[in-house]
Image 1 (cartoon, helix red, strand yellow):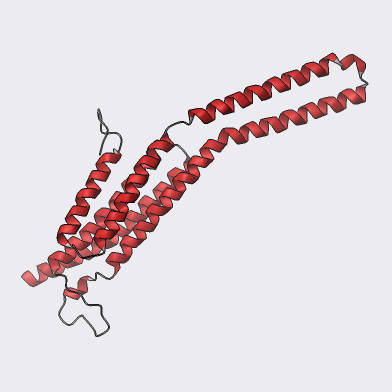
Image 2 (image 1 turned 30 degrees about the vertical axis):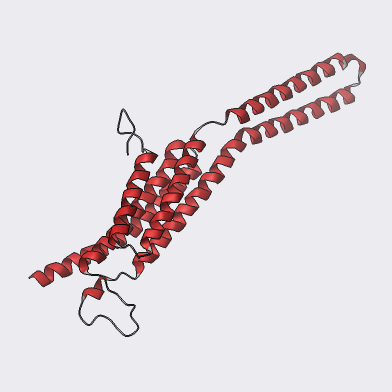
Length: 239
């Protein structure tokens, strides 16, 4: 998943290829299960995220050119205003001159504020797009967690079921594979989120990416606890 010429950057195409292979594995093992549909939805989201993250990492040259033209026009207007004020300085009284200077300073402050707003507008638009994409990934992580939620290792124990228990037909091996697939999807969601952190230097986006990675890591840890329990039960039966 690293860049050509060094192990320094994630490659979106490698993440997508890994997801597609995972989807094929799920289909081969659980062709009629809902997990394959979740993985297919994740692939579609991953394609959008890869293209979106690449687009957000690139500067918007047309926007910046327009902004520079606006700044240049504003500076020219300020210079023209000060020249006009200087030409009329001998024809005005002191109170009128003070009033004119105050108006010019207020105009300069307003112009500076407008320029500052426009300079940060591109960053805020990109931030909103990135946060929306990260929210979609977070939702998919919770959907995956719901699929593994009822996969209880105690189902392998004789007499563990009750009349109210859901019907469980998975073998020990199938249950382990199912949980492992869920864990892999969660890990890949974290990698998709990291694509946004690599292409942007926005502190809010980076924090949101870190939060999502912490979420997927925590959910994956719960899954591996179940896998560990399954292994312990198998070892106990072997003894």
